[in-house]
Amino acid sequence: QVQLSESGGGLVQAGGSLRLSCVVAGRTFSWYTINWFRQAPGKEREFVGKVRWNDGFTLYAEAVKGRFTISRANTKNTVYLQMNSLEPEDSAVYYCAADSDGGDPDYWGQGTQVTVSS
Image 1 (cartoon, rainbow, N blue to C red):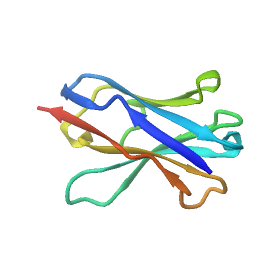
Image 2 (cartoon, rainbow, N blue to C red; image 1 turned 90 degrees about the vertical axis):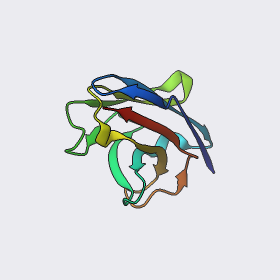
Image 3 (tube, rainbow, N blue to C red; image 1 turned 60 degrees about the vertical axis):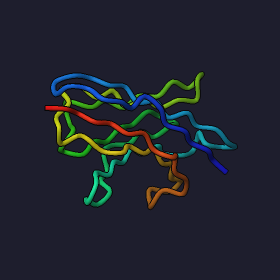
Image 4 (cartoon, rainbow, N blue to C red; image 1 turned 30 degrees about the horizontal axis):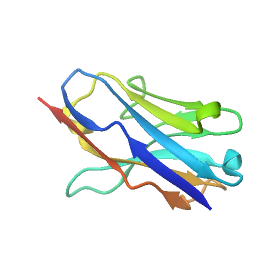
């Protein structure tokens, strides 16, 4: 079992930055990949990026590449999503989720709201 909890969302002006945190707990989570997804009202859930816990490999969606950075702090069991140059289109509820095999995530956090004003 893996538990995830996001924090760090809020309201920011366009062009600003936010850093989201995802605290991960549970047995053997070091073998998991931690994903970030987002979902805006009326839209489908969208993949943002991911980090493989054991070696730090990262992958990003084209929409955020060059603006968002995912990192992990092993000693804090935390994954970060640093979001720079935010745009109103980035407004959504952001979720972290863990998968063990590259497929659909097995575990999800509760989400944190990010709102970017124009």
